[in-house]
Image (cartoon, one colour):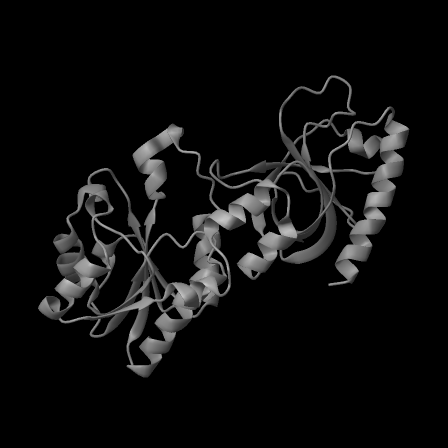
Amino acid sequence: MKVYQSIDSFRSLPLAVVTPGTFDGVHLGHRTILNRLTEIAAKQKGQSVVLTFHPHPRIVLHGPDTNIRLLTTLEEKTDLLADAGVDHFIIHPFTPEFSRTSVVHYVRDLLVGQIGMKHMVIGYDHHFGRNREGSLENLQELAPLYDFAIEEIPAQDIDQVNVSSTKIRHALNEGDVERATRYLGYHYRLTASVVAGQQLGRQIGFPTANLQVDNPWKMIPAHGVYAVEVSVNGTPFAGMLNIGQRPTVAGSDKTITLEVHLLDFAGDLYGQQLSIGFVARLRNETRFNSMEQLKEQLTADRERVRETLQRR
């Protein structure tokens, strides 16, 4: 898959099959659209093009006031679209100026003129352009004028998989990562850097890597203890991850921390980036009366992680 950082850097194709959208999560509903996109491109001997915008429009238009949290970073989205068999991925900068683009300019000059769109695939209730004024009806009016065909994926075709980015966010907000997996078609993932911590886990035989999520808009699942799969330089490890405020540790403040203990791992992780896949939520975060009680619970958690991941 070829990746472009702007529509301006894209060279017009003789037959482009295009779908625009944010595609946050690249979930099963999105896959319905992408499968149809690549199917049409193959049938018509054209090339498939996904057009997205970065940063997410709501972040640009609402800034700190937006409550949106993203399911995928740009890098994660790129990898998922490549796995879906897309030929070209255009990441166009979204700015306040671009948000005022008229419907006609967007379709005629950008999609048709710059990309070479001959066929457009959209999900139901797709809106675009200034104030999201563009709709299927506008596209149907413009299609014969600018010589492109349009296909809307019916609501029932997407709803059959009963999924949306909003539903996935709700599942993660409740810690239901298994439901999120069913909606996504893969384990929810986040990428984080290992930073220095207090090394308290090491004292009770459970050394942990303190994690810093690099993207401030990335969705973090609910507080609790999770069975996770961790990739370290491409090598997979089983792990248990805690999200919360470490209530058992004396002097803990209200800071939210992410800590992961890798099973059967020995080595230094400081400064490395870890890719973490959420498999199951084991329990709530709990305050224990002593570090010894915490150690006993962590021992039990470790066995549950092994059992959970071995069942997969």
